[in-house]
Structure formats: structure tokens, C-alpha cells
Length: 223
Image 1 (cartoon, one colour):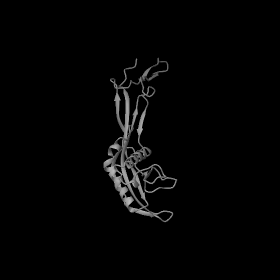
Image 2 (cartoon, one colour):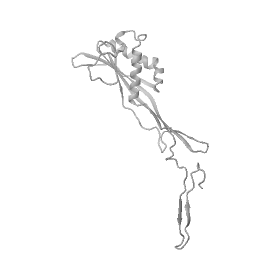
Image 3 (cartoon, one colour):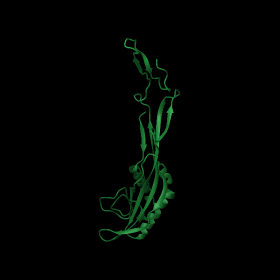
């Protein structure tokens, strides 16, 4: 059984948000106004959802998904840092070790609208409804737990042509974790230990055993 590591980092989290938001904003039973329906075709009007700021011409309205800074420090100290447990066989020999850790990643959903402030406000309301009510089961399938949801507040700025861009942002504090399973390795586990130190009490004495290390308690005595 090979070593297994399951780790959901910023890339996996952003992809999950992208897939879930695109799916829900494509559902016309929820999004009644076609101006806010997601469409991947950039030649067709509608909401655009990005995982990063596009290098091409930006379409409005849009939602851009980004990851904010977060604390990735280990949650424990010592040699067996973040050890979740150890399985042993009937003789007490370790056969499996697991390690687990938790962390919180802020995912920021930036909303930009150009036509009117109504677009900004309605999209903000939609996103809050999706995060808080409609999509919790969807996020669970990705191993994501949503914690604090913070709405940044309304703002605006002019683009290069002097037109006003209406903005808001919602930051979701995502609870996620990792797990690591380490199976035994025959080269790493000592099966038998026998260390002898021989020496002479006097110059012409017969060598005799001065020290011998015992086997680890989980192994049978050396023969």
C-alpha cells in the first residue's frame, strides 16, 4: 500500500468554488434574470466567473475568485507533529500511521458590474444566498466547510475609459484539512536488534561480553 496524501490547497478550493458557482448561476430556475446567467461563451452576454483576473478583455458583470493570505502553521509540536493515530498488529508492531491537520483559507469572491449599481447589489445577494443556504451540500462533497462569510462593502472606481465600475467582495473563511497515511516499510522498521560490545579486562584475558542491547519491547527476543 503506497503512502497517501490528501491535501486541498488554494488551487483545489478555487476550482471547487468555480465549478459550484458556475453550475448554480447556470440554473435558470434560480437565476430568473438572464443578465445574471453564467455563460462560458464570451461572445454572449451574461455573467462571467473567473479564477484569476483575465488577460483578455474583461466582461461585466463578473465574479473573480482569489485566495487571501492565511496561516498554514502546524497545529501541534513535537516529534510526532499532527499525528492522528497509529495502528498495530496483535504483537504490537506498528502497521499504519496517520497524520491530520486543519487550516482556514479565506476565499475572496470579487464582484464587478458596469451597467448599474443594481447588478452589483443583486449579484452580492445571490452569492450570499448560495454560500449560506443553497450550496452547503455541494461544498461538503469537496471536503469543504464554510465558516465565516464576510461582505466587504460597496465601492466603485473608474476604468481606463472613465466609466464607473461598481464593486463589492465576499470573503469566505473555508475550513479544510489534510490527511496523510503512512504504511510500514520493511526497510524502515527494525525487525531485530543485537548489538554486542566485546573487550578484555586484562591484556591477556579472553574477550568477554561487556554490553549487549536488548530488543525493542515489541519484538521477540533475539536468538
